[in-house]
Amino acid sequence: MNKKEDSSIEEVENTSHETSDAGEVTEETSIPLTEYEKIKDDYLRLAAEFDNFKKRTEKEKENIGAASVAYFVNSLFPLIDNFEMAMDQKEVSKELETFNNLLNSVLEGLQVEEIGNVGDNFDPSIHEAVEHSGEGESQKIETILRKGYLFQGNLIRPAMVKVKSE
Image (cartoon, rainbow, N blue to C red; front, side):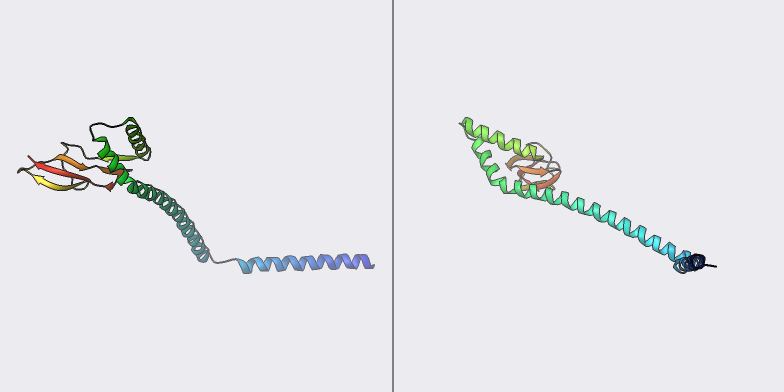
């Protein structure tokens, strides 16, 4: 045999040893089925936990946005109340009416609703009674002293009312 044939035979023998070593490595890295099931279960739990985390953070972002708008509207209440008093005057200028309409359209755009109308049934969850008159079973709103407001269905200020029982 010459040198070329000897080296090629050695290469074949070396690769066969490497192949058998790789087979041994595969056998060493194989894990029992119960451990595999545990790892898979842990992975699925982690994936579900991450999904819940994403949903929770999205909901928190929405709540923070809603709370910010509610806080902003809450700071506008003195302005809104003053416009209400000004609009109740006998003579109201066109400019004042325009500003009041603009303010109302802004509140409407922010999904802020007025609550409390004269003649409605008294609801302590959305009305604040400051005076009560009459004797009877049913309680109706007699006078609205200060309007109340809802933001996206949540109360941000109760209506201050006088209640009359009939």
